Image (cartoon, rainbow over all chains, first blue to last red; front, side, top):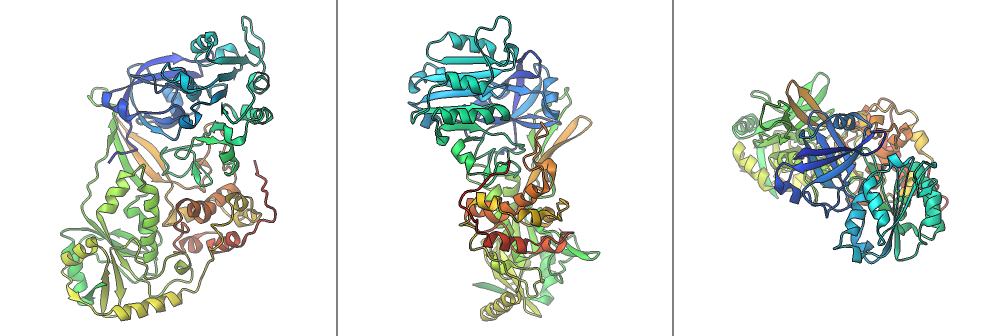
Length: 280
Length: 354
């Protein structure tokens, strides 16, 4: 019987400061037992519990992509007890990962469709995983147009900046990067994510799906924009967060109505969210 | 029906015989209340109780249970590698569990043993435990099991159901585990009291006069019940003390916490409660169920609506009446049943509160 509480042992292989204010770091983990990497087979959009023995566990979206092998990556905001401890850990330290957990963006359904990705701030982790997945040479032909609107306060607060610049240069993905206020040397959009979405995103139709991840304030103002652009509620895909412990549907705290964010989610369509109590 | 007659004179010797192959648990009187405890040598179950203060769910789902251990000593080869805490799981027998509490085990099992994930600590404990139930002849005034799919002679979750016939117990042996236990105890007289049993059952059911109604819970929409106007009244007096969740045989929510002593540490599963603000608070300080109205509503909605919709096995309540008896401000789940079951939303559209 697989014990879902028991983390796979991992070693921190690399730590990268992800934003200019140093509040986010990207941790690259390598499994101590190579066979565990196969057991950890995941899809873009899933999360895992990062497990620090003696400190605790936190649910974090997987930032690496299923097409990247040999490691897993998580970008972590320093916020509470476990994440603060994690930010003080060093390369070579041993800890645990439990997962993969939750559902994922509906890749089967999304095949053959145009994809609009709208992201804000540091909620870009599973979106990065998704973009890497879709741009993989094996997968790119499975999708139509890919548009990405990604906003942050300043250029230095954008995650994965090197990759964003690489994607800007490609012609098989339309990048719409934006920052809140003008900055020297910034040649892209200026303005909050919702108005930039309104200007740059493609119209919604049956064959176009939007995946939206960001802070509540961005979500609040982006949803009306998407509606205006013609996206139906079952074509708007979101990823929810709630306080979690077990991550696999038993401990009871992350429920929104009869759905559990950890097991039935975290990915829901807006149509689904509309029929659940707003307890997230 | 496989019925065995146990003369009360053979009772203690049978219990003693079982000690060789089982760890025994049963109701014992402690101060003014009954609780389930390990029956060490010389201690026999005390059946002169209506029901115990806490349910015996802890025999499978302890209030605090070590699940993982680890070393933080960097000189040790396996430091920081988390390991499953192996459980010593000899066969165990729980005597005197009431049918309501036995039924609750079948409901808890829906949460802990699922097609996708299994809680190995729960599953192992359940596999190795034999439940010997005690039918209820004199239910309490707060018992309402018969209207929530249970009853004073209900057999769900039991391996044996004992019925007190005066100078003897009749044991209705329900499972192979039950047969093994009966044999180990040396109780072997066949009983032909099937008709008496049925009569006693009907009498006991008739004594349960407290009823709730559940017939409309399924058909009323979640969002309508969630937005119903009565939650302010229901929750007004609540102290969020959590007594209801701790005494409830069907409450399963838990927390996971680490403890470190020196260089070694353990991870525990601890009972938690949806009545506590910390249960859901985010690290940002945002709390999706930050008010007591939201928390009280969550508890009743989970038991009487979300569970009903999700599993189609009725309500997540066995009618034991503990929360009714022990709530310090007299919140009565039977009234909430009736409020929820009789609620008809006036308009078809619902407005979400933020």
